[in-house]
Length: 41
Image (tube, rainbow, N blue to C red; front, side):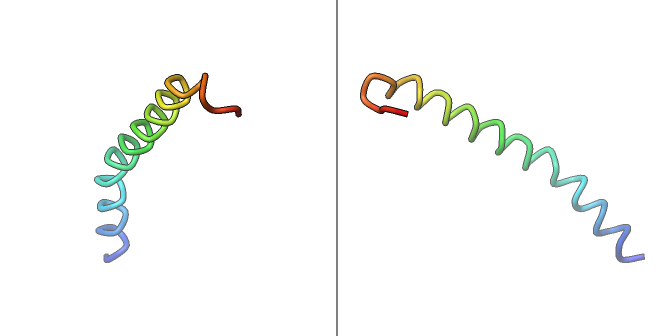
């Protein structure tokens, strides 16, 4: 019974994790574009 609640909590938390991941990737790309002339990758 408890694992059903556990899975339900994970599925409720997934969109939040996905949004954080997309935001992190976007910030990384944005900072790379802004610092391209300063940073050598």
